[in-house]
Structures are given as structure tokens and as C-alpha cells.
Amino acid sequence: MMRSHERIEELIAFRSIYGLDPQEQAELEREMASHGPDCEECRRLEIEYGEVGGRLAFALDPVAVRPGFADETIELALAEAPESRPARAGGLWRPLVAVAAALVLFVGGAIVGAAVFGGAEVSQQATVLQLEPQDPALSGSVTAAFTPGERGIYLQGAGLETLPQDRVYELWVITGDTPAAAVCVRPGEDGSVFAFADSQVAPDDLLAVTVEPSSCSEAPTTPPIWVAPVTSR
Amino acid sequence: MTADLSDARDRELVQRIRRGDGEAFRGLFGRYAPSAMALARRVVRQPFLAEEIVQEAFLAVWRNPGGYDPQRGSVRAWLMGMVHHRAVDTVRREESQRRRVEGSQLSDPVVQPDPAGDVVDEIGLPEERRAVRAALDELPAEQRQVIELMYFDGLSQSKISDHLGLPLGTVKSRTLLGMRRLRGSIGGWPR
Image (cartoon, rainbow over all chains, first blue to last red; front, side, top):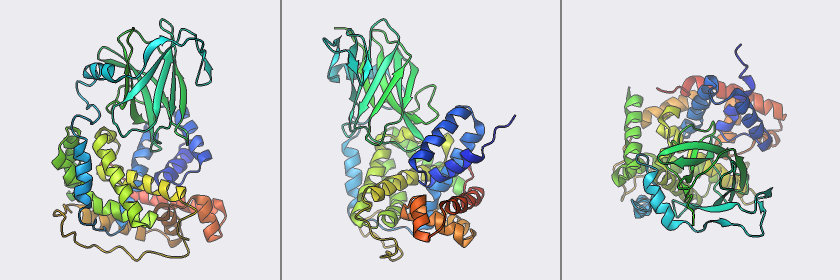
């Protein structure tokens, strides 16, 4: 039986022109979750209203940018290229292991005397990884905690950039070249996230965070923006 | 046909940006920065803030071109969506400082040549403007009004309700009816 999309259409339409209030945003997320990631009609509504929301801008006459502005912006962009840009798709994961291993701030080790991580109780043998931003311009911090040999990863983020309403952060556990989806999170207004993933990590795995569509992805569709190797000391 | 061609060009530019091609970034900037600037200035009403927003949006494209998913719409809608979100966020953050809606209205933006700028790649954009304006013109005035206040002024539905002295439910129903019409006229993808 075809599910009704009347309410979800209304919410998606409002969202596409930034007209949702926080309660409606939460309602839309619940509705989308109840329809599931394979809801074709939901996807069609998101795409078509997204087009409306983006294209309305062209009702305005263009405004010439001030002299020099284009060059300033392009110079800023090119100053980041190519080595400081996030890793690109294609041969994505393996090179990151070496890079992240060199950059990681704090890896491994028991948290002596500490059993709370982001408000959750964790084993005193938990390993904490601080994920390394792949772009110096990224704000905030991302930390993961897990107990070696046990299932479960706690993900905590603070001061993260908010995302468009149709995007989420997704955590991946990468074994070799194979990423496995762990959990999707959307930061609150203060940029904080906290989530639990029913996943297990092994030595030499890689933890990575990408930005994905709000329906979550089965495989990464964008380059990782936060990365940490799981190494044993 | 022109829309298909310009969409294909845009997608190709983003593909090249993914490979770190600075010329492609320059091309995308030259093509869309004037439209992005018009939108940002219309929403935030302050040229220096508008510049920040446009610059941030384009740098976000450079840093994460993979954020564009060709299965989910056009490059131009994706790019302008980012500009719009940033602009409305800015307006709502600076609510206490922003101009009163009833008060100053910027004069309509006027296209002025940038003497130092590149030749702007306008392929497909005049048609795009005509199509979007025609779609808005076809809306009943009361539907167009609420959509414009929400989109171009960054007002929430409750603010619009206060501003127009209408019940919130009326604002919502007018918005939805208008958006449904717009979906039918300019919401198609792929085109």
C-alpha cells in the first residue's frame, strides 16, 4: 500500500526555502526515518523541491562582484591546492592511513581512572582516538572511544560546522580498502554530536568521517574530512 | 536543450574541481558568483557580509566538491542552496542588527561590469532567469508574497505571520500551495 507523502512533502517544501522551525525539522527527520532510505517518492520530493530552492535565486538580476574579489577568492582556494585539500575520491583510503598516522594527535592507550566518555560509561580499558581534520579550515574536534575486542564505538564531536539540512556526518570503519558504515549524526546548534555505533574496530583499521546525504550512505560518496588510524602502541 | 548543455558544462566543471583544477574553479566562480552575490546581498542587505557568504560558499565547493551529487539535482541549485543557507543563517544570527523589513529596501540590483573581471560565462543563465521569473509571476500574489519573504528576506513562517498579520496556518498553506506550483514549473530534474 502506498504511504501518504502529504506531510513529508509539506515539510520538504518548507525546508527547501529554509522555512522549517526546529520542531518541524525534527518531525521531518522522524518522517524520513519512518519511510526509510529507499523511499523513492521521498527522494523525488527532496530533489525536486531542492531544485526549486536553489533555482529561485535566479529570479534576481546578477550583481557584478567588486574588482579584485574574484581573484582574491580564487587565490584563497588555490593556496589550499592540492596538498592541503581533503583527500579525493579514488584510491581513497590507503594513502590516508599513512597521512593520518603521521598527524594523529593522540592514539590509543587506556584511559586511566576515566570511565566516562561524552556522558557514557565506558570501560577503563577504552581506547580514545582523536580524529585528525583533513582540512585546516575545519572547525571543532571529533573523538571516538572503543574497547579493543568489544563491539561498540562512541563518537563525540564538539564545535563542528553545522550542515545543510539534507546532509549528515557519517562515521566509517575502514578495513583495508573496505569502508563499513558505522553511524550517522547531525550536530546540534552548538556543533556537538554524541552517538553510539554498534561496530567493532580492529588494529590497523581506519576511522573516518564523511559528509553524506541525510538518508546515510552505504559507501562514502565524499572524501573523508576527519580521519584516525587504529594503531596499537 | 540550452539548460541541458549548461548543466552538462557545470557538472564537468565540478568534476574537474574534484581533480584540483583551478581553472575549473575560476570558471564556476565567474559563471555563478554574480548570481550568488545577488542572492546574498538580497538576503543579508550588507555588501561586506554578502561577500563573505559568497566566498565561503565557493571555498566550500573547492574544499569539498564531492558534496555535489549529480543524482540529486543541478550544480546551480546545489551551489545557490549553499549560498542561501549561509545567507539566511547569517540574517537570523544577526536578527537584532538587521534592517526592519518594513524599512529600507535595497534598490534592485543592477548589473555592472567588473572592469577587472573575466568574461562571464552566461550560457543558459538568461533562459534560467526568464523561466524562474515566469514561474514566480504565475503564482497568485499572496502565495508569491510569503515565498519571497521566506526565501529572499530569510523570515521564518512565524515572523511572516506577524509581519502580515495572518494566522500561521494561512502562511503555511499559502507557502505549500505556491511551492507545489513552483515544483511543477521549475522543480524538474533531470531537465
